[in-house]
Image 1 (cartoon, helix red, strand yellow):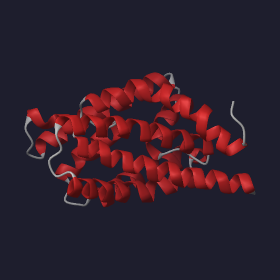
Image 2 (cartoon, rainbow, N blue to C red; image 1 turned 30 degrees about the horizontal axis):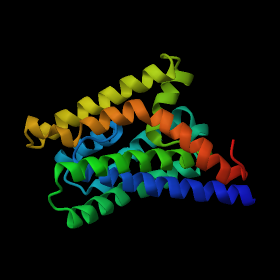
Image 3 (tube, one colour; image 1 turned 180 degrees about the horizontal axis):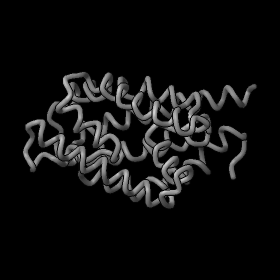
Length: 216
């Protein structure tokens, strides 16, 4: 029971910190992770708040997962679904109030902090093992249930589709090509290539020791 409580706490902490990190990514305007790139693009053309739009989009992906393979859905999936969008919305507006026009060095610092926070949060979220996000579930289903291909390649394809879709929608929303760094930039590349090793590091040094009471 104690470990179950820890897992739930880790899931909640992971989702909240991850959402705050996305707020930092958006404030830095140097690119966000692929799924958030798509969400940011949609936010430019859908007349809803980011939190509401994110939740509705996630519900659509959730329905797909529930129909095809519901065993990947858990408590953490719903925590992610109902909290992330609104926390991202709040943290982004809060940070914009504090940093209305951040300099490039400040934006770079925000980006680095956002990457570290996202990897730290993801380590706790994944180690808790109480379900995956609806976006993660799609790639897993395509790979393991439908045998389309190895997960790592499926994830690359879904990420590329999200980034491409995000950029197109962002431009359709009235933005210039020179402004696409807000949805696809250095932050997008960093999250694609460096999140894995950093998540593994925080798994070994923080998440697993917290859950099991000892370092590996």
